[in-house]
Image (cartoon, rainbow, N blue to C red):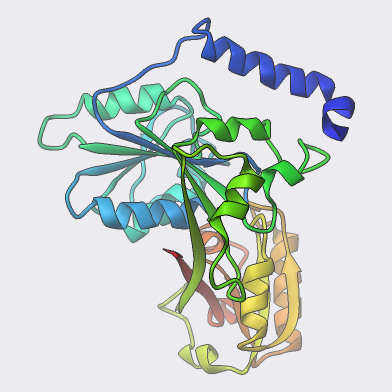
Length: 327
């Protein structure tokens, strides 16, 4: 009740918005093509991108898959196809990461999901997608997806959180009732078998809503600048860590178990690294010249075209690839 009292205008606005959509006073659109929405109720940190990648890996075996994203943080407007050699300024870091991992998959960014879908469906039959993924679209009610997947962080159950800015909720937690599938993400290794009955009660799920659990899998280290990277840093026992992601705790915890961590720098999610930020990272790196400098895969997309990176830092910059597995 704390957030309802202190943030009553915001809470009322959310309730009114959903009422207008639910009652049909604001139009929603459906399509004959299967559309899967992947989203959350909190602001960042639930693992939307790796879960979208997991779904792509499965669907592309039998379908022509297209991914539609808003392209958070991009400087361009309107509809745009994402290309492998794009700059994140133009398309956003997460869509660019997806395109670079799956070059054969159509990835598009647009603030209007409807316009993006209409554009994709206007393609010639041989190029037209047979299934569309909407990235981070649960709160965007204009499109009614065939299947709605909502991600919930294991460490932040939505009914134990508060609306922004008191907490991390961008929408009312009761909206989870609109999900077809709920995935509790980032299950820690010590919880080998999460209790589905307990979580159904915690999340107020109905019997007809599917519930799954997922865990992060850490994969290989990759150089951000392969042409200049000194691969000896991959085997260094020391590391400096920096991230611009919503929740870096699992990332740091994993690497603390593998390296002697000499320093950690945490930046805001989707951080556009400034000259001063790069100087901070470089200064810390210079203090420990034999230490690898490691960041996240999403951050790597924003660093590739950064003009402020000195060569001495480029040669030791690595990113850690992650995947998710369904338990």
